[in-house]
Length: 269
Ligand SMILES: [Zn+2]
Image 1 (cartoon, rainbow, N blue to C red):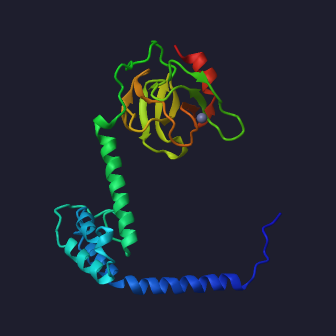
Image 2 (image 1 turned 180 degrees about the vertical axis):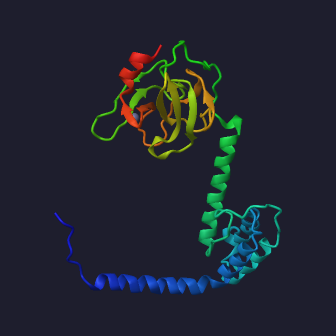
Image 3 (image 1 turned 60 degrees about the horizontal axis):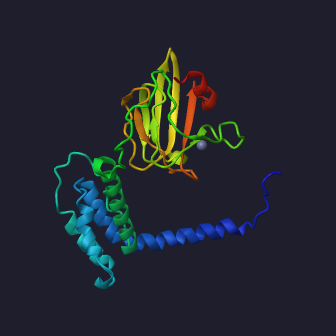
């Protein structure tokens, strides 16, 4: 069935007119604030401290409503502070909010980003790995990523599932299936959630293995790191598009998805 072409001709026009009108009102209202913000950006002097400096102006609810003029004045004060930073401010550091609500949202986003950055770099915030073997048993070039698990769904189910779900309790150690180079390691990679990808050269065949849904903060390696077969790389979790603790494990050769279960059965040792 082709898409319907019968639509009221007035609909687009009405929508366009309405949007244009909104944009005009909005632009007129925020012009003083924008002008100040632009001045700061042009000087490339707006540093990370601009937002915190402004934060006190946005203030608690009992401070009463903040007018556009106050916003502009306070913002002007906050950008007086020059920075020795040589790089231009990132989009996140630039002051672009035009209403107290937006400012609160930006503050919250900045705080969340700071917490995420701290969590990623603070070792003490990581889940404990005390008592876990740092290397999986075995001596082969290929190892099972989990030493104890319940087999779950494999690839080829017809719903785009490209890995093997290895069911295990949260916190179960995950081991690199083969020696190689970490090509990706992040707290969130789409539906994979906390995940790691490793490229391995196995007798001249480049094999990529992927480990998804790990526990937040449990990644032991970063992109560019070299790993050994059986090296502890993280912990089984339930992040990303996952409903229940398990390792979603993928094996790819030349970009094609392999069924990890028979591949491990044939190669792991
Ligand atoms: Zn899966």
